Length: 480
Image (tube, rainbow, N blue to C red; front, side, top):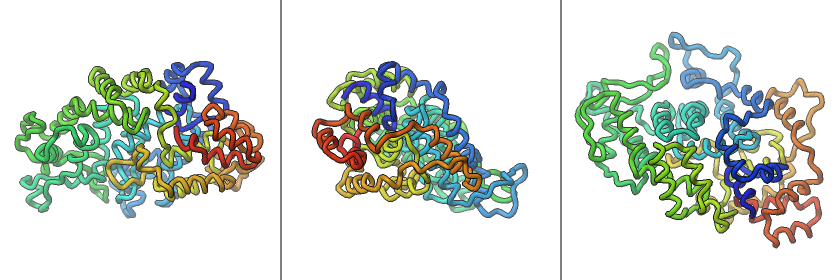
């Protein structure tokens, strides 16, 4: 596999028609430089229009909670969109639809890959109460703006968001000796503190103790979410001094004198700057872009770059993509696609999008990867062992056989005025897709450099009408 094709495979959700030739003209380095500056890669107009139709993507946590919390009265100063008619199920589905569309259509592919990566790193699940309505604004406000920025900013943004504070129960974290603790009989909740250390920063082998978990939980007391009911104010982050432990703490050997709300930003900075965090983040990035068990030499380089740049993600990725390990031929085409990656790469390869986005989301649920639906705090894995099984292979083979149901429908001409706004926008996007010949012929030409001699022989011997099906089930398409 050429370095150009390898680079496209690793930095995107899959090859698109004509992309290989374009990247060959500018070179792998040119493509990497382009992808590291997503602000210069404008979203297609029709994609922007479609995303604007998903109202839930633009609402803030109070509006989302109050609109679907069945409150008869709104707090002062809180207003809702009077034209909003979406039911709760649709509000939950809109962020997932947007995520799939961006993965298929956005030219800023590395940005989308990193948004997906960091969401899983700082996972919250839509299966837990109001968090289900907040996943979209959580990704929008806490993840997307910082996906290629400073890790410290990601950490702080996620720590302030009501989705995270509700999901990991810190909204209930109360010092037992505090006024609120004595009154309510509530106590210390260590869930968020434990995941901050184990998953978000130092890593499971990062050298912390159970005592550090408890001390961090004490620092986090009072750090929560304002209730969202009539007369109580919006459901946004707030600090409750009456629930805070105002005694001295010692986190990882560092003393914290009583400081109220200021203790948490100081603790987050301490964790972000810790050498174990640099190593943990370096390992995870190397695992996503190089190998499930990445070489220690690469992890060391990325860890060093993290420390040199104060956790600048763009610069860490630059070091990664320039490394001999990333360029090493033995790692090319070896990583197994997650269900989301596989489905997005299919649609990108054909230059198409689903006729209806809802069945695509159902497909991902059936394949064990409902978008925003990972119930555990560690998020979805990128490790082959978590996705490759006889049952998973059979699902993808069956999908390749039934691929006709995901083919592009004949666009309405003119746009059907009775169709939903979403369907009208989808039709306009389809009109802009490049023309395709017999199924599989055009995409086979683009993908020939990726396929082994054995796969090419099987494809060339098959009838034209079956080639696309064989291609989607080929060992090479299952990997990236």
